Image (tube, one colour):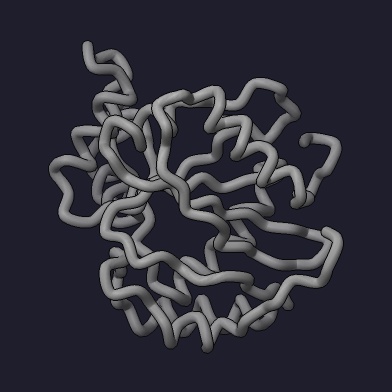
Length: 205
């Protein structure tokens, strides 16, 4: 990046939690998240949008370290983030764990497909922040998924771009954009935005 980002502390971020953001409101896990976030030496850039429903596109996704970096801030802020998982994995008693962790069962074999199933979840939910990695893999790939854009457009929800930059040890809550219906054009804009950040394994970009 050309200039040092303006960072804020985890305490400052948690003082301004958006009213409409879905939260877990768990004091214990919030304290744990804050502790490990401070220990990590990472910082935040930007603020969280005040949206009830949101598609969160997180990149660059190049390593399992992405999850390790992201989890403390999710716990600290109390973000109730949801992630897609195939419905076949929702077998008792594991289904109880998946639901508690925010995973949403998606029936990929249904006529409406994964996109339609995700859109239905948005329609049925009062609040929902849906997190997805546009690359769809930690390995190097030239082809990014556009399903998240189709979901956002059909559900009529904005897309928040979230990124981590390992050289500066910063997590960025970036621009919030509305989809145009032209997935390829929107994806081009998104990839250009994410190109300024460097993942844990740059060779996988």
